[in-house]
Length: 287
Image (cartoon, rainbow, N blue to C red; front, side, top):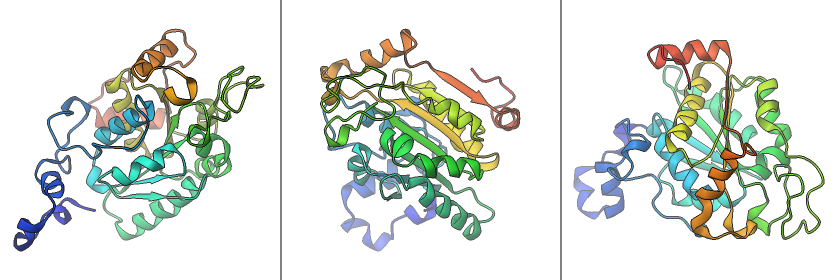
């Protein structure tokens, strides 16, 4: 997709759906909008079928508002709660087989590079902890080993929330879930550290509690993936349904995880990526 492709043919303007007309006239394409502008433009996602208080839904909304160039972005997703939301998003996206998302994204990125050699076409992987750290870990890591220029975002609700609340590799040790009645027996997978050691040029872990930090991490991951190498962002997205808390407590749960350092906010940048970001961001140091 490109911005000119979004323009309506004048002859059909009066029969186009109102939602589409509004997206063309007041959407984020080519405007450079960000999280701070939410509420002032037609967003890429406005409705979803997910549970009340879903941290994942909030994170997806913030991710969509953080894209540097949504008109030139394709999202590759996978099976999970997020796959229920992506049909509601006004952006080109692909639903891959469970865990296969980084393999699909690798082929797509290479094809777009051949088709558009002089233009950035961002391929963004967005998937849950099961697809990223369990079922799809081999394909995720091998995309990092190969140096594929992709940004991978994990929506980490620390469980297989879409299928009844089984433990995942990202569930905390001792965590009791519907299908883990005696508690998880091993520690949470340290995927940010794995990403760093696997060749990712930029790695961050964030929560929706601080939207501007989440935006900064997502934008940096996408920008670094354009020129330097693979990147990884891990976002904590509390699940009220499977962890049995009230929907209005979602952000409080994430804030407590930040406070007690059970979900520490981290950022790792290679020297090459730091130099690239410094040039883009006017030479300022990262937070």
